[in-house]
Structures are given as structure tokens and as C-alpha cells.
Length: 476
Image (cartoon, rainbow, N blue to C red; front, side):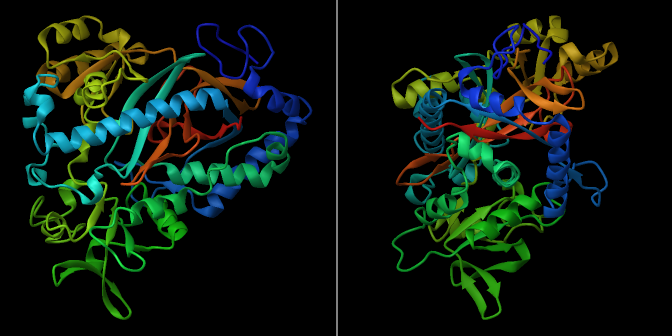
């Protein structure tokens, strides 16, 4: 396999064909496999995904056009030791995010202490004044969290960003594992891989534990989707089906006797927990965007009265803000009393004059992102940009510097993918999924590995041409 010595390869030792410890069993297996057989299996996987309907829409393109997310059959393998360290850091970070959200909507002690600038909250479009003084049922703001991680060395992991609003991708994680189990059952006999298939049941239990007030019997849970044209509609439908809950749209719900109820063949049935995949601005036309037809009029009033749980809570998007992200080490220490176990990527806040000057001078070397951006949109990868792109982006940056942060171009780790010429290294990131309830925090072992399929590319987002891999965490 062709390797690049400047990047940490997770499967192979530098300059050698010898595998690292977690990959030893897998490497012995693949050495015995016929390359033509592996290519047929890769083709079978694509057929399976297409038949299952695992596609997504890309915003800005024809709504009828759907893309298949490419799936690579070479798994990414993480040792039990590596995962133990990662999971401790993830849990610490998620606890701090939840505490931070409660604080900024109540006493705002972190602002009074000067650890986070007040203007970053007051001037932030993701901050919802409607949530001031509101305590979610069970004290949970972030019921589902995705923490994006990158690796640069054997023991070097960094948090790239936090996803506390509506993290997506868990359906691909589950389908990736199901596909691998069907195609290569012998691999799971030879490798002790921690299962992930219980995620939908764990999600349902976690949501049920967050039911408002005391509840007799089985809580009624539903998944709110914007509809079939949303890029993640497959996931909304998939999770509702796997949890055994109803998938609803805004027009299926209405206010009945102080509760939010869904339409059924037997009339309207009150809902206890709504796992909403609709953004804040579209959630309630009476409280937010008056033109929205995706949400439910009056649902925020029902929520503030404590008569429904919304997962995730409105206003959690401020924890996704990339300017806030730059303060996460301080946030973790402020609320836990401990140093952050997982480090941030070094970040320049372009709202600050000195940082802006540095970024403008070194634009061709940096990755620049919108503070509210996601999915790889609106970002600049300096080393891969043309002179024209750099010039155009420099003008946008000068016009609205507070809208951007910048980070160094990290030497992301690589994992092999199967190409026509055999195994070849490609850059990856990892999104573990975390379930938070009043009772506990559960981290799904592994998560979604996204892979940049183009040689040398650092952009792994599916919307930008990336693919996915099955992620294995090995048992002790």
C-alpha cells in the first residue's frame, strides 16, 4: 500500500507493510482474500445501499436528485484502550456542554466570571431569549450529541466540532455495520467487535427517561421531520421505524388541551417526547419564523409550561457555534473543575483584530469556517484553494470577520480504502454519538467514520464527495 510518511496511518506502521495491533487479525484475513472477490463485495454493498434507499439530498441541487453515500468495505478499527480514553473525554465534554447551556439560560455565571465574552452570547443568532429561565425536563438540553474527532498521531486526538442541535449520520453507522455483518460474518467471528445495533432501543429508553413530570405507563414518543425533501429524511424515517415510534410532520400535530397531540385514526393522541429534526427557527411560527409550515403553532408555550419534552432542547445550537467552540477548554474546566481530556484544534477568532490580521496574512495555509456553518459548506481549505478562490474568500472575510474562525490544516490520520489498484490511504474523521438522559450518558462504541475518497483531500463530508466506513471498537 502506498503510504505518506507525513500522516499517521491507523492500519500500518510507517514505511512498512506491518499492521498496527488492532488491525493484525484483519490484515491476516485480507492477505488471504482474492482482490477480485473483494471488488465484487464492494459492488454488492453499493447495490444493497441503493436497494435499501440509503440516499441523501444535497442542498442547492434539484430536490428530486438523490445521491448514494459511498461506502468503503475496509473497516476502521479502534482498540479498547484507545476507546476507553476517548469515551472519558467525550463524556466530560458532553457534561460540560449541558452545564454551559443551563447556565447561559439561567444565572450566566460563566459570563460574570469573564471566562466567555458576553457579546458572544448576546449577539449570537443561535441564542434564544425564549429559553431564558426555562429548565428542560430532567435538566437535559442535549439528548443526542455528535462529537467530531480527528486523529493526528498514535495518542493524539482533537475535537474538530460539537454537534448539539440535530446531529445526523447515526443511521449510516447502523447500516454500515449491518452491511458488514451480512457480507463478512467470518470477520466478526475472528474479531471481538463491540456491537452497535442497540442504538435505536437505547435512544428510545433515553428519550423515555426524559419524559416531563411523573408518568404512568409507556410514554408516547414521536419523531418530527421537515418532510421527504430534507437531506436526512432517510434517517428520520429509519430511526422512527427502529424505535417503533410515529414519524410525524408539523401538519400532523396540533395543540389540544394544553398538550401537543398527533393525529391518529382514533383521533388526536398527546405526545410526551418529540425527537425533533426541525431547526429552531421553523419549530413554532408563533414564536419564531412566522412563515414556517414545518413546525407546530404554540409548541414553545407547551414546552415552557413543562408539558412536552423537545429533544434536543431549543437553543442548544449555541453550543455548535465555532466561536464558542474556541472557548470549550475553559468551559470544560469551569463546569467540571478538570482540565479538558480532549483538546480543541488551535483556533483563531476572526472577530479579534490580531487574529484577523494573522488569518488574512496566512489564508493560503489555513482552514477557515463560518461560525454557524455545517456540512462543509461555506468553508475554505487554504492549501487546496486557487488564487481566485483565496481572493474571493479574503473579501468575504474582510466584510464580516466575526462570521469566521480559522484553524491550521491538520495532518489528519489515514485509513486504507479499497481502490481498483488495491488498498490506498485516505483521510478520515469520526463522529461518536452520545445519548444523554437524566439517569446516565451512553456513548455508542465507535460512531460514524467519514472518509475523503479523493486522494489528498481533507474534506470528508458526504455533501462534499466523502464516503463512510464501518467503525469497530474491539473488546478488551
